[in-house]
Image (cartoon, rainbow, N blue to C red; front, side):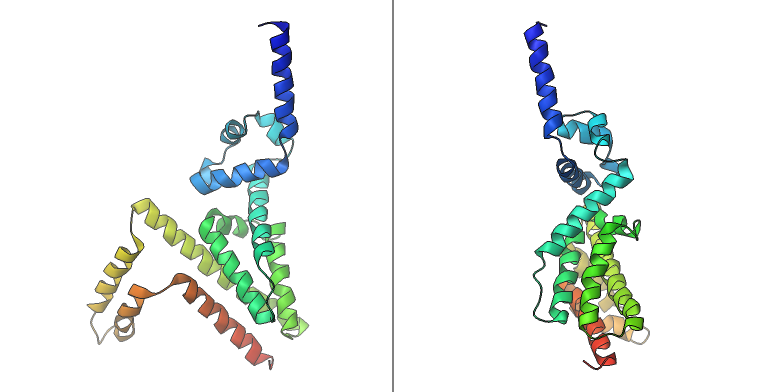
Length: 231
């Protein structure tokens, strides 16, 4: 290789390293997590996608755990920014909850990442967003933790389960409507004396909307909070 060629290569490498940023790394990590899950996120694969060496990535993030939390935080921050504040605390909580539900659905790894980083910034962002609305609802200070905790547990629990169900369906190649129809048919054939309630819900199961059901649960919790504290 000529000296000129070596200089051009060195300059090209320098430009790539200069253009590499923490944001670019995080965006690439999110894309890998979405397509391949946590197992698919390796520094080698990430380096190939970014056309750089692992050392350049380690300059911006300490390890895979740090990168996973940073990716989770980016998704959470963008979700909260996109949630337009409602005219009332109830509307604000509903918008935030539905935004997180959709984010976890679109990025299934976010749910488990949040559970493994309870004291980290992603969870703090969510707690702050919900907590401010809990205060606005007039919940006394010594009751705010239990009210906020109830909402957060519901959001993460139902959102995470919905994402897990969707992932399982994709893995098994199941169509949602066919799966629900099969389950509903099984329920409709249950013994009416032993399972009267479950059997009666067979028709509703076929046509239910996960997002609508999720918001109904949020509303039940909010009505309980408002009723308890006189709003």
